Length: 499
Image 1 (cartoon, rainbow, N blue to C red):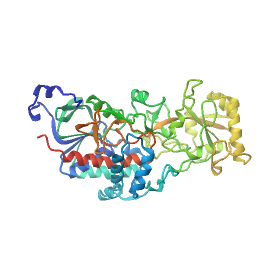
Image 2: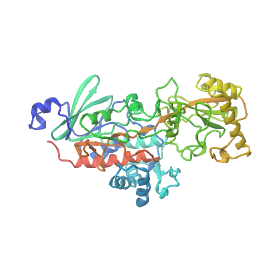
Image 3: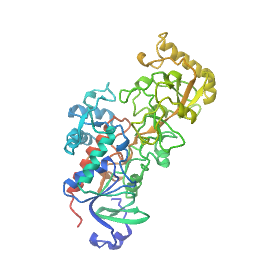
Image 4: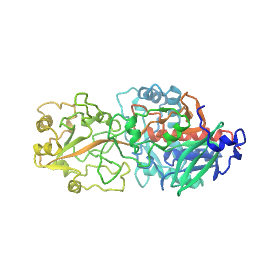
């Protein structure tokens, strides 16, 4: 089965699990990670009568749920949603998993309402409207005093608190404990001391992705550096724990990553506001372009798929043997600079940590934004090719003035010429909202071993081993947190107790 026995289990052989010495805590269900999926799984298992303990490595929890965009898929057209998702998800995701995902996701709004949340329709439509049945991609969000993601997190944490579910904060899970009967607990560290936890029913891994693990990113993602917008606690812990007892992996090269700025003052990146997309608020001005290291445009800035734009930045130049779009640059003029902050504060871990100035002047003074009196000087400062950048801006301005069509197909109403000096540039990078790789799971949330068989009493939920492959649909991750959190919580609660 691929399970590694902990030393105490080896000594005890076929003895009852209760004979294993020195467990510091016994519970029915152990959940590792207190983000959205962990909270949902805990609530579900508790409501089915299970005793639940959550381990969380940080002081507060929240994971990426608390800093996400807050949109949640809640489709009503079940058949259409299945066909739409079938066209996006890879062959590894079977029809049974898609069907159960759509079924549970269709209940998301009602489930949150029953918890006391105030749920409203989300105004954003499907990410890929040209796909058949795209109209089935309805989203909802939770209303409240904060952002949609903060409101969602409050609903979940209130429900956990009201149920008296125990949460061990500042507790790092380090190793799964397993024997011939499956996963029976975990070894953790709390306040510098070892804590051994025994479970009567099993373990649910809900500890997020690997956005902040440089080794895993270098191994599995197609380029570097790739930074992250989300929670810095996502360091691949669940991947290593699952691998250590024989799990298979999937979707390790899959992620959702818009563009952002990386500055030395913070370990996380800051989301750009100079993005034209139906999924986020409009930019402060349309007077900007994206260019690569050489000063060439490479994308239609008016039709950016917010979560998938990173794939355009990770293109490899087989002639010069480099990633010529990492970093890329946003180039804009003084009109745009004075129009409003070029960073977003409503998404990402930066919420509340740094307030971007309204006129971008503070960031110019910090050196985050380059400024020059001419295009030639800007090219020199950024080491772009002077003639290339000059020609790029000239052609863009001609399309703005109606002299010719835009070479990238940018929509006319979003084209404002870059005419007013000074001129500015800021480096942009692919910045992860979430990674999707991890232990492969089946439609019941069970972690599978290298031969495709379930590892007994081990489940995974949320971003860790997500069903999302190469193409991601916005709102799909929070929907997965809720749907598979409920699925895993139900299935583990049904298991016979080891006591």
